[in-house]
Image (cartoon, rainbow, N blue to C red; front, side, top):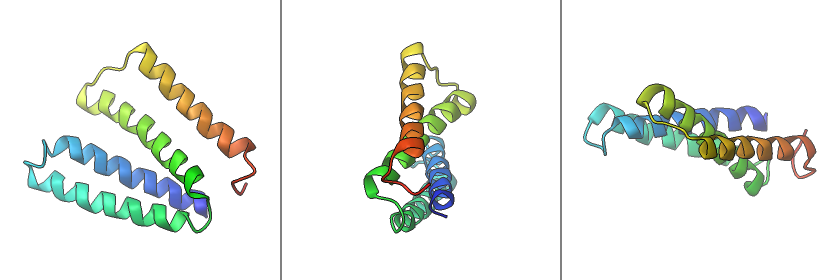
Length: 109
């Protein structure tokens, strides 16, 4: 259950951040509304996740997955380039998330 909540928190945060780029610094109403609603949903879901996971673990997974997803969306949707150091850094972030998930005794498995 906590990972399902966390997954949807990451999805909502990713939608909000994508809309933030599309809002053009809050000059477009539709994407600006999506930003506020998506971030509200993301924080509520993250808050619910904290009933089951330690805050440091939940936040590491939430932010790490969000970073990688937003970088991929930035590349695919907005044409933003990723160089080799950026890709290696994101691979390390994903590796860290896997280490936490697979080996940490601080999280339920």
